[in-house]
Amino acid sequence: MLEKAYQLRTRDFSEFRKIIKVLKEKEESLDWQSRNKLDYLWAFYLSRTGSTEEAIEYYHKVIENDVELDMSFNSLISLVNLNLLKGETEQAFIYATNFNDEKYAAVDSDLKETAALLVAYTLLKSGLPGEASELVKNIPEQLAQERNECVRNAMLSELYYYQGGLDADYKKIVKKADECKASGEAILGYIAKIYFAKHEILNDRNINALKMMVSELEDVISTKYDNLVAQWYSTLAEVWLDNNSHEHAIRYAELSLGYDVDQSHIESKVLSLLILSKAYFIAEKYDLAYKYMDEYNELMKSSQRNKLTSAVAYYSAQLKAEESARQIESLNKKLSLADLESQVAKVEAENNRLYLSMALIVVCMLILWVYKTKLHQLRLKKQVEVDALTGVLSRRYFSECFEKALVSAQPAQQSVSFVLFDLDHFKRINDSYGHPAGDWVLKAVGEVCSSSGRRADLVGRLGGEEFGILLPDCDMANATRVAEQCRLAIERIDSTPAGAKFQITASFGVSASSVVGYDSRALIVDADKALYLSKKHGRNRVTLSPNYDNSVILGAGI
Image (cartoon, rainbow, N blue to C red; front, side):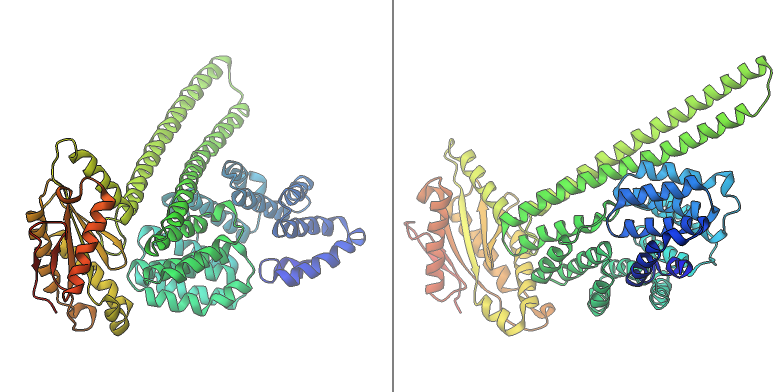
């Protein structure tokens, strides 16, 4: 039964749970060697059921008893893995340095392969994909255990994603992932497929990714492995967002956040928060969008700090291991006093060199972290300022610019004009040709209007199919000309790329500070009244403020 439980522990946890409880009841009747193996299996059971600290105690007990070499080495592997899951990577790397201990020289090759793969995985999760890749290259292609081949396949899938894998690479990955599922290593197979889906998204094959992820969703949920299910949901949310379905993206991102993931799988939570922020921006629910953006920003910074700490921990552990090895070597040599002094001087010089190298590594990583943080902040700033669909200013940022322009212009009594326009019969376009066609129209309108005015003019999307143009240092006559140029540009848009042939027009209202003063609300209300007159008189035209003496209407009408 012990051997059966050992084989089932990673393949069928439900069946393993039943057997391990029966074995625990029979513990007193087992010989000392069998008890040692039971201690290892019981530690594995505790680690999977949330009793991490108690599991660590049992693994230490197996190592200290040193009854069976393979069980001791297995326990060492488990300690590395548990500390990685807890986010204590420095301790994980310290344990990992013991893999090279001389007493483990006779350990089975399959366990050594497992240890090497685990170290590579730890490096990958520590933000060191280059080091992980080099280590994986040194592992033989033909491995003794099917599980190890599945572990390597899952890791290669993630490495290819970060390092630009080719379609041919992922064809092999998916084939092996299906073989892993068939052999009982379903979790590893699904992890590999997650990064295949991300590869498809990067290459604009969202439909392929969506079909695969939806078709296998129920099987993924049935694994009951929270880290996997949370990552599957977050990737599914990413696919839906790229397919312009923010409602589905929100649903799956929220489902992902409902799972309690380990520290080493925090990426799924980071991705879900980013998707929720973007999706709520598209849905124009700005309070929620900013809430999730703040949470994402905080978690992203924390994740980057943890990766930096982990990378430093790796080099620190390497340094300690090298220093320890040198000390042992030094103690084993019988040297004369003069030779000993010479050796001490050499060791000190070597230590200084290593410490200097370590300091340089830390400085380089801090510079890299600062650079990535700044780049990330610039991306977030762009997300806040720019409407994701149309590329023009977002409502919130446009409003801020509007207020600043008025405050700046008022002391010198410079004229500020405002144009409000609305697409004609936009609902009819959505209903007749679908929302993708409507999205295309909004994007096209944003592009032509951004290039129709002066460089100083700002175009923003105020909501739905309604846009605004802010014209600093511009009187009513010039603002009217800009509005007419924009109207004509919209009228000339060729809708063929949207998949159908239809006319696109817009109705405009123009107001200026010379008419209603330097109050943004008054300008918007006044321009809206003019826009209403454009609609009333047949649409596709420009109408000046009804409070303006020389109010005129431009445009042919429809």
